[in-house]
Image (tube, rainbow, N blue to C red):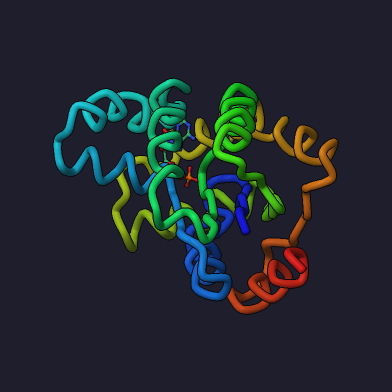
Length: 186
Ligand code: ADP
């Protein structure tokens, strides 16, 4: 089973993604994690991505599409995967559809974790104090939210039209949100 977890920055996607991948035995693929690890290792990809990530902008489509294209061909994805942080734009969603059909795969379900803006900002600022992620400062967070609303949120309609979108309330404890997700996946 191939899944997508979708939602604004700070919605708790990463936390829920780990629990989903554990329960359903699917590989967790986070483009944010892949880019941060490239950055840490000083690879060319990391260097290219850094200027965008630091500003809270999206990394160019061709870079992330290339990452996912290679990743989903790997053997461990045959039993299913969970995409976290991808797709984030309509061209990314289109590219994903083409690469999946080329591999004879499809997306079973897109889980949208819904959290309002004021809650997001306070959660992310708290995370910044705990984890020190460099793109978690207030100004960058506001920009990431803007980018999300403008470029990523339109994907809800895209997956709704395909009958694949499930909306889940992201307010509550980790376990509460997780049980809503499990119900949504079915
Ligand atoms: P969050 O969901 O909290 O914003 P992520 O870890 O998913 O955090 O992403 C961090 C940053 O990595 C984004 O702000 C963006 O710069 C970059 N990034 C991650 N995934 C993508 C993607 N699919 N397309 C473009 N940029 C991406």
